[in-house]
Amino acid sequence: MIVGGALFDYFTPPAFTAVPMFAAAPLIAAPFFGLGATLRIGLAGVVAIAAMRLYTGDLPGTVPLIEMLTVLTVGCQAAVINQVVRRGNEQLASARIIAETAMRAVVPEPPDRIAGLQVAARYEAAQADEFVGGDLFAAADTPYGVRLVLGDVRGKGLEAVGAVAVVIGAFREAAEQEESLEGVARRLEHALARESARRSNLDAFEGFVTAVFAEVTPGAERVRLVNRGHPDPLLLYGDGAVEALTPSEPALPLGMDLGVGPDRTDEWDLPAGGTLLFYTDGLSEARDADGVFYDPAERLRGRLFPGPEELLSALTDDVRLHTGGESTDDMALLAVARPAKGQPDLRRTVKIVKRDGTLRD
Image (cartoon, rainbow, N blue to C red; front, side, top):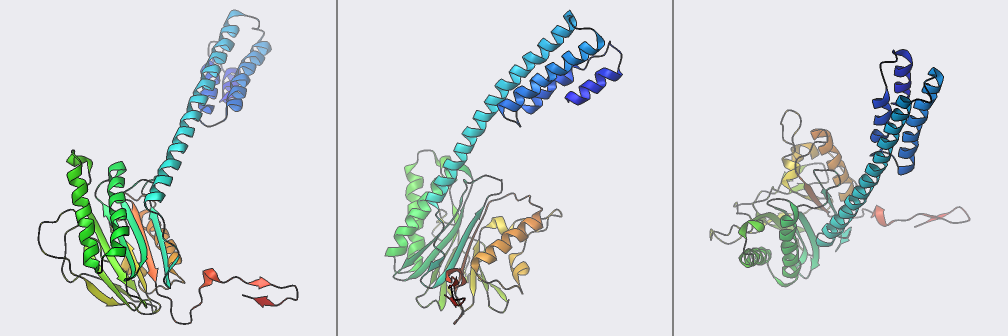
């Protein structure tokens, strides 16, 4: 702006002035640079005017002094704006850290290995730097096997986070105490009903939660599922085949108990080398520029992955490619793999080079 203003002033008649360009320079710099750079740019504008007026012989004079005073005043205002923007950015960064910490405290990532199963989880926000949402996941090693839940609360924001806290808290308790997976689902249903009754403003509490509950039996040979209105999980086989684990009877989401009947558990074999993939509708409802939905079963069929973490990384990258980076809903992913017999746990193998050049694990 300063160089352009100098050229404009040099090549135009004296009646034309480039003062607006000199004054705009520090204002443009204020949101993007530090305080020192903003002040230096404002000072550079004042010096440029003085140099040009000395060159034309108009300095000293009333008009040049007014021009320099104008740019100097705007430069001081730009410095104030710079400080306001900096403080706002610091407050925003602090709020993001608090939100991320709170969300991770409510929905912590499970350990990467539970009772011989490899586990990976991921939360992908629709908006960059957004950490508060209504998607949830949890995994627990219990006397009845490894139990998992992945769900999606209706709505967004702090109210959704409150429902997430209720669901996760109830699941952690029920997973250890309830003998059946149906009992776990009932405990969460009752917890949501109590929370809804406790709050006087019904609109302040998100009314229902789609969720899928899973129980991998000790020995990891079978998986039991209770699906409460959630997208069907996928079972990825070691040969690249993909199967959707569709419930035998559809069920309503949690929080919509209309007395339609008890939960029903379905069972499938979990072969060695197989991986269970649970996801929220942020994945299955992701659209490309033509409005075509993302089909995880079709996109994953025929592909092999070293482990669940690599599966989730490839999946999130593929979704970004499909949507062009324009997702409209948050996405939670949970993958649980049963290692094949004899398959080494690569994430727990460390190669140490000894001084004699030999290797040891």
